[in-house]
Amino acid sequence: MFNFGWGVLFVLVNFALFLICYRAFGKSGMYAWIGFATVLANIQVVKTIDMFGLVMTLGNTAYGTIYLASDLLNEKYGERDAKKAVWFGFFSLIASTIIMQMALKFERGESDFGHDPMAVIFGLLPEIAIGSLLAYFVSQFLDVRIYTYLKRRFPKPGQLWIRNNGSTLVSQFVDSLIFCTIAFGLNGDYPFDVWIQIFFTTYLFKFIISAASTPVLYIARTFKFKPEA
Image (cartoon, rainbow, N blue to C red; front, side, top):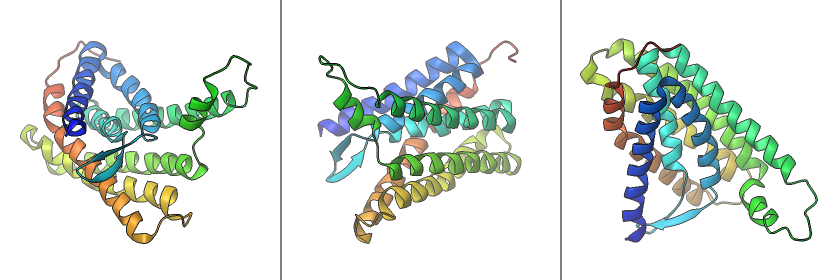
């Protein structure tokens, strides 16, 4: 039960920091949030935990807030700013991957103790790195397109939950399908029934986090700022 209670607190802290970031820095804060949340999610995914008899990876909360940020940008500033944020997150992920892979190639000093932990975290298998990049790229732009469509079909302020959950319902399914297929399915290391469990739990918890973030989006939408560039 510790993991569940701590997990609830973990989610609430992430949401609170998200709101603080937007309140303090406005639209620029959302670009920054997407940048570091993309990197954090791919670091946290290395750690696995047990909850309710299921093995799952961390990173779903941070990754869910990326959708929250892009939906907020789309809601308040339009599709163009949301797409720009997605590109920023994609660049952050590529740049951090390249830089850390180069950093691991340095010859370690005699007193070094940081290389091995860094190698475990950042020396990920090519399948995971490729799957993460491709899943992010496809699902995020799909989320922006679907949100824009739903914004036209359901434009009322009270229909925000339809726009938010409708876009993430589809885009996170695509995200989980691409990532799990490339990272765990194509290499043949996992039987099909195990792959199905990984895919199902990954998608389920990502969507739960996104659905839970709906009140956060309602709160963030009320924030007022001076005209932003």
